[in-house]
Structure formats: structure tokens, C-alpha cells
Amino acid sequence: MTETVTLGFTGDVMFGRLVNQRQEHRPPHAVWGSMRETLSDLDGLFVNLECCLSTRGQPWGVTHHPFHFRADPGWAIPALQDVGVTWVTLANNHVLDYGDDALSDTFSALETAAIPYAGAGRTEEDAWQPSRVTVGGLDIALVAFTDNTPEFAAADQPGTAYVAIDPEDESCLERVGNALDVATRDDPDLVVASVHWGPNMREFPPPPFRAFGHWLVDHGVDIVHGHSAHVFQGVEVYDGSLVLYDTGDFVDDYAVDSVLRNDRSFLFEVEVSTAGTVERLWLRPTEIADYAVHHAFASVASWCRETMRERSARFDTTFDVEDETLVVRVSE
Image 1 (cartoon, rainbow, N blue to C red):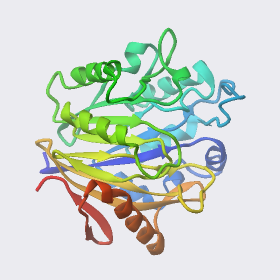
Image 2: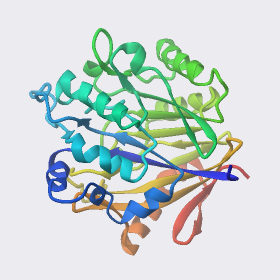
Image 3: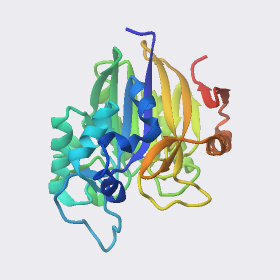
Image 4: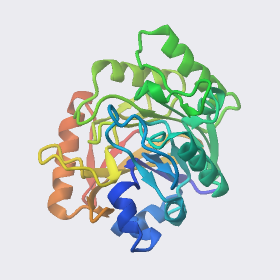
């Protein structure tokens, strides 16, 4: 057993549309661009899979749900395996883009590949069931849920772990609290909450989300893994835990906002002791180009670092710089 374990967290991994088309003509690993070796060197990798894995189904709700993301599992699964993806969250607003058949194919593809997931399921109970993985001897429990697209909520049909996030709503706290109770029942070394929350293209989390992030930590969560906004938001150290309010976009074909630059983000690399203490966060700048993710060039990396400092200032987060990488010391 090593003294520390490195865990990578990313925002949207969206393999559909133009990414899927581009991957028809190149090997599966090409989608990871120049990040491939860095990702492979991690002990664990946790991503938001922002699409279904299927070649079946019809676009859902075309009149009020204009974007539909679907990738061929024939290349997508090998791509996930190539860099050793440890776990994916399916709690988002695109996993049902092509209906129940495509969602069923997604479950089957991940299960056949032995890639654990959470945040969606064949039943409501399944959707809210936490995952458990072991990385470098570290026992990790993961819960995943979303406040996006209530129509996708699992109930009498397959769907997502949906909850309207409100730190003052007892029904919300009870629902999430029950999932955390299950996740922490056997005293894991580390607890992660992966949350697809809030609207698109927002640079800062709303105050209720900050309160909810703190509530999660108060109830046993060590790392809050946020995503949904398509742009990275600030990071906060709270009571020895790490809150990543939004990890932005990692791989996709999305239109790029020239100011918010949703094509730029980070690999959020967390160093954890084998006792389960979150030690440090490394922020490795990334940029999407040619429908793949790459290490950011110097000028882009500088923009990412300065923007992260600005977006984290309200949380009084302190950054060091090592080898041109921002570092947050969580445990002193």
C-alpha cells in the first residue's frame, strides 16, 4: 500500500455528436489527446459521463430538449478503459437523451466492462444506490445525484437520482442524507458526492449551493465533485474537505463562449493519504481541441490559473504554484 493515492476528477466527458463522428476515423485513445499519459498515471479517475452509450433509441423531447448526446460503445468503452476510468456518474441531464433503450444499453455496456457507476438506475432504488470502489487500497464510497431535468427522474421507470437541491428543504436533506447513510454504513476511508447541479455558463455557485456543499461535508463527505455549468467554478477547503463547485468541461463538441471559455478547465487531481485524509489538490490546466482533451499551452494555462484564483477568491482559498500547476493544501 502506498502512502498516498492520486484521484483525478473531471467535468463533462461528452462522447456524442461530432466527437463520436471524429472517433470513427481514429483509435479510441485519441479522444484523450495529450492528456492520455497523465490520466493513465492516476491511481483512480472519476468522470461525469454526459451522454448515453448506445446506437439505439430516438431523441427524447425534441421540442424542449434540443441537444442529444449518444456515443457508440464500440469505441467509447475502450476509450474509458484505455485510461483506467474507475467510475462514472450518470446523474445528469443527457443520460436519457435517446430514451429507455439507450439508457439500458449504457448500463449494460458499463457493467460488461466492469466500470462502476452511480446516479442512474433501472429502478429508483438502483439510481440512488451508492457505489463502492477500491483504489490503491483506499476504500471509496460514492453517491451521485442531480437537480437537472426532473423528467429523467427514476420512479416507475429507469432514470436518474433526481432531487431539487435546497439546503432548507427537509425532503431534499432527507433524500440525500439517506444515500449518505448507506454510503457510510461500513465506514469507508473516503466519501465522494458527485453532484450535477445548477444552470449552464455560470462562473460562481449560488449561495444555496455553497450552503449545501457545506452540509454535505458536515454529513461525512470528503470530496464534493460538482459539474453542470460547463465552466469551472471556484474550489473551497471546508473543514478539512474539498468542494469542487464545478469541474467544467473535459471532452466535448460544445460551442465555445469567447469570454467564459468553456473549452478550458482542469484535471482536478486530489492527493489522498491511505488513511483517507485529503492532502492536496493539483489543478492541471486543460483545453479541448480537435474533439479531444489536451494539456493547455502556456498562455491558456496562465489564463486558467488566474481565472481559478479569481473564482475562488470569495472562498479564501490559498494557492501555491509548483511546476506551473496550482496547488491547494487541504490538510496542513
